[in-house]
Image 1: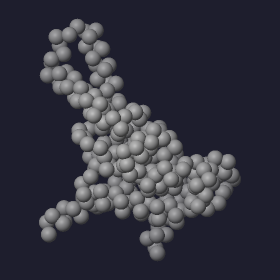
Image 2: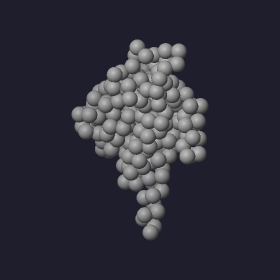
Image 3: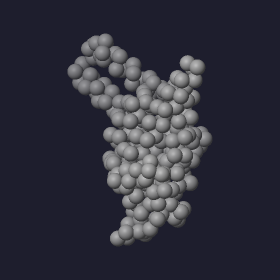
Image 4: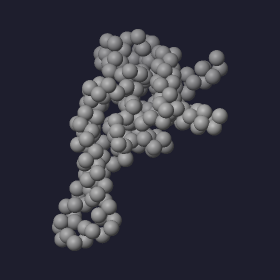
Length: 236
């Protein structure tokens, strides 16, 4: 009981309970709303805890199976958090704009990533020195653009087992692609989102840095716990 109280206090301190104005509420978010304060919707954090635990259990199992998760958060508030926490568990991420086909046309995306890697290797080996200065500048710009678009995807060779998304409304293109290829979605959903867009919706403030960080930290910790469980089982 004390642990649950402390968790609710932590979530409140992180500002996770603040939604948007009542006029922006998506009808299907009603079950997760406790009330309103100065016309700002307030989430029922008991339900947020429940949904977060469901998502963590799912992520923990992915960790036990050593499966890949793609982190997606392109809004300003999410970029750095997504990059930081995905790297702690060596997972791919998209923190710039979502490029169509990342999930539904993976072979083409993989080829672009291979092309980027090839250009970087040629630059590092000095192979690009044979080109004129103007040509090298053009290639450098191409490398920069490719890294911005694909740099977070790393070396993944197959589709991820799940997506973790900050703001399902903002990332509607990622949601649509994931649904087409039947990839489970974990998403932070604010009061203007449709919770049915995610398999594991987490109703909470998706604009506050502290709120986003709290949830993403909890999810990555759950994955680490799964990895530890896997290692323990192997040693038994």
